[in-house]
Image (tube, rainbow, N blue to C red; front, side):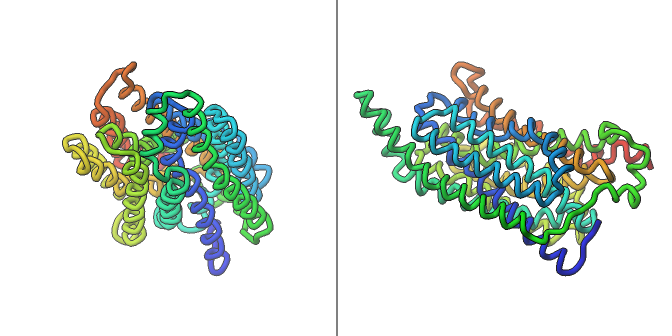
Length: 427
């Protein structure tokens, strides 16, 4: 059901606010990885990257239940519920900081991922459906700017609070010979996280109330079948091959995106850069993504089809990943950050291509795609194992390259052929 006029603009603004929240919370992980490695006394990057594992695995476990929740609540109330769940996750950081419990921090991140799973399952099909499917990538690009501007700001804000003087603190902790002194240093550092997350919880609750009482219009996707013959006679989402291939495409895309955004810090550290330098690297990747989204808004669908934008983005990803592998130092970091430009138009293109023609299966299809976000949990863990001295022990550059290259090659396949699979048979 497409909306017009004031309701359309109002819906875009509301969903834009939600995408800002997604970005702000999600890309805090880039700061939390080095912060929790210090505050909780973790030994390896592989352990610290459990931050992304806990956060993104929530999508895998909660996406399908989220679709059932949305069937009961509708889109609007489901979004409000997701914000409240995120607030609960933020509040878990208080006892986690007080006890310096890495497990409790991970639990808080998992609960935040649960809330985001509900929000993402609702908001992504919503923004795809409220206008023409041909321009869905353009609308999602607008949402992406909201998301990535917030994501670029959030690590700068949090790192300024919790990682101020990070290199000095790191040196003090590593050089402390008295165990009690070391514990006190780590406890003092852990306490820095409490106030930001209390503020976050309050803001999330206020936004939940705003969404709950807003006049955001509901969309009845069941009615789409009457207008969309491609879903007629279907009894299961497994009868849509382009959707299943799209879920795998989301999996590898998010893995590549998290590698470029969250792993860039540990990657820089492995190249010999200080924590004071690497703590803001995530923001560079996200500003690069903002540029990509602006390009998408200007060109899709007026000058380029969303499937072609996805194809060119995949090729760009291969090129930048290869250049990062064959260069060193800050030049290599530059090409990792530029992967943000390659990644920017991927989600805006993949999601509408995968969800097109689902009709009454839109909510459950969206949930399946959201499950693919678990790629952000799995692929960084593969990287962590590859660079772990007790694992395969590849160089950070080699490990990064071999983690992201297969991702971009599969995305290229989906952009060229995968998104049409099943549709051709039906057509």
